[in-house]
Image (cartoon, rainbow, N blue to C red; front, top):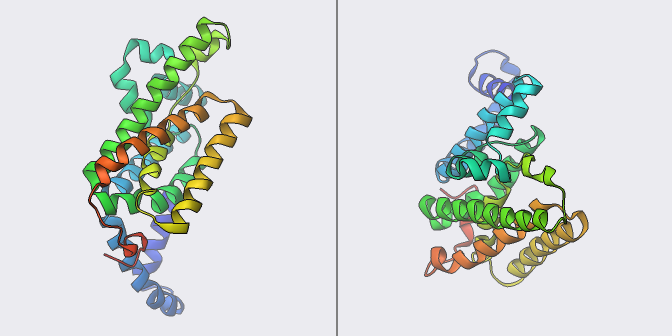
Length: 240
């Protein structure tokens, strides 16, 4: 991904390959609009840049080292019992696979960036942090009970649990309050349907955590978005 970005920048600004000049002229207005959009959502894109770096570190490390890096930052029961603050913070900046980075690049741009442009960076950080930490602790409590009553094996105490999904779904819940009419109903139906079906079918503890994160986001939304208007242009990359 880094190489692809560097190549695009080189093609755009290099005087070589004059045959690409028509393409460059068409691209420049979109380049300015994209740059303005990125600057308007600094938390979203700084976070994505950090994920890019940590994912690169993970993918270029030996498999044994990469696994150790993720385990040390995982919010599993063992790590939460030893150093909860450290892993609650660190776990949000690592992904368990490289393909996730591309998925989050799209989803952050479609969801996190519009919310940040609407309620501001500080409130977006607050919702993201509360969703990430709150859903993690709720999930951990559920796992602890499941182990105690022998519903699941003790191996889950040492699983790798890192990523941004809890924080993302908390912020995604805030976007419900930004939409209106049919768009709100459709967005809410798709999101709740997806979270409910995956939790019911897959039965993975992270899917139940997603539901918890979404509920946290809904509960915080009236506080962080109260009194703010819903300008339709806020979702468009063309607006500054």
